[in-house]
Figure 1 (cartoon, one colour):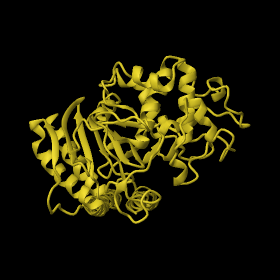
Figure 2 (cartoon, helix red, strand yellow):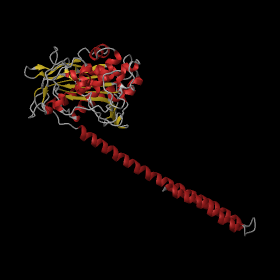
Figure 3 (cartoon, helix red, strand yellow):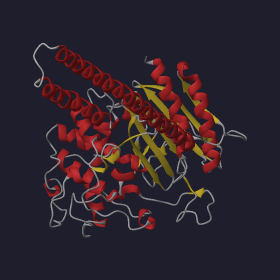
Figure 4 (cartoon, one colour):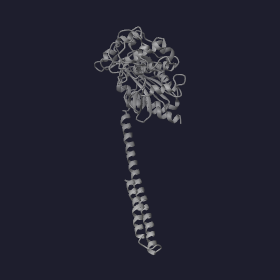
Amino acid sequence: MRQSVSTCLSETANKMIPGRVAKVKNQLKPGSEMNRDLSESHEDAILRVHFLQKWFSRRWAKRLAFVAGLIMGLLIVTWRVVIHLTERATPFSGTPLPTCGAMKDERYTQAVAKARDHIQAMMQERQIPGLAVAVAIDGKIVWSEGFGYADRDKQIPACPQTQLRIASVSKLLTAAAMAQLYEQGRLDLDDPIQKYVPSFPDKGHPITARQLASHRSGIRSYRDDHEALNTKHYNNVVESLEKFKDDSLMFVPDTDFEYSGYGYVLLSAAIEGASGEDFLSYMRRHIFEPLQMRDTIEDRANERVPHQSSFYDHVTPYSMAGKVIPSPFIDFSCKWAAGGFLSTAEDLVRFGSAHLLPLHEGFLKSETLQLMFTPRSGMDGIAGYGLGWMTARDLHLRRVHFHFGAGSGGTAVLAIYPKQRMAFAMLANLGHAKFPFSHLMGVINPFLAASTVNNS
């Protein structure tokens, strides 16, 4: 609108007025008084038009600036209301569960106090018997603590060293092993998987490690929850492929997304083929030991390690009445790579910190990390799934890489914030605990705010 008015006035001043004045001047004697008056009138008209042009321009510019500011203000207020409503949590009230082994950096005392309230409220709301949490900033653990009970009946406390099931967070550990072999040139992400697992049947379309790690291979997922309750023991990874190797693909590889634990089992077989080591040995020697993850180990059905938690469930098909009961027997030899590891919150933040720049040096290259974090499925620029890691922006527009885990007897989350160089892990001994988002962010946000202040 402003441009059209300005253009109109300019054309009037520069075309119509000079033309009409020139026509009259041609009919008069040169140098006459009337001729001089016409020249002065012409200049005066031009000045007036230019004045009107500037007046309209300024007036519309102010109006447009006001409207733009108003819209921006409304958007900001609306977004803040959304954040408040989404992250608002019910305050904790009642008798707090006991805690164990609290360790904190004094700079984060206020953040710890806020986080504890949210954890107590979460455990009360979700009936969680035991939980452990850890936060690391710049590679240093600034808070670690256990809450509730590792064994509810024996009243054994959950402590930082308590080993809990991490469920699908195990996929991140497997993805790191794949990334190492890729950097060493021993595993090509785009070669047919039969190069590393010759016994796996050809499906009519090439299946690659890249597709397996990003759930784009077409390998099926569990048919139902009962299939996840495996009781058969497999002596090695290749043997465990029998559960799905003869099934048809769900789609042509790389044409769709289907979250698949079996895809990661096949990926672990490829890791064995590329490395020449059995999968569990490779994980211990090349992932756990270098990162000092001393309490991370496979969950063996008939073996119990000293600090292992008891496990509980409260949802079907494990518990039919919603009551918290001991978890059923499960043999994880069918899916070590997809969801079969025990770990601690402290070990997981050590692992997460090794994926943050510049703390990654000596573990994985920055280019490899970027490859793993870049989404291959999802909403471009908003959220998606890369090679193992999910990537998104939270409600405060902070970039975060993460993975959740939920299975019988355990719920877990590992999240890393690259800009704040923060790693966060929370593990519970209740399956499918569904950590409430409001409480989860109530634990994370105080540390992100404190880290910004302490690093400024």
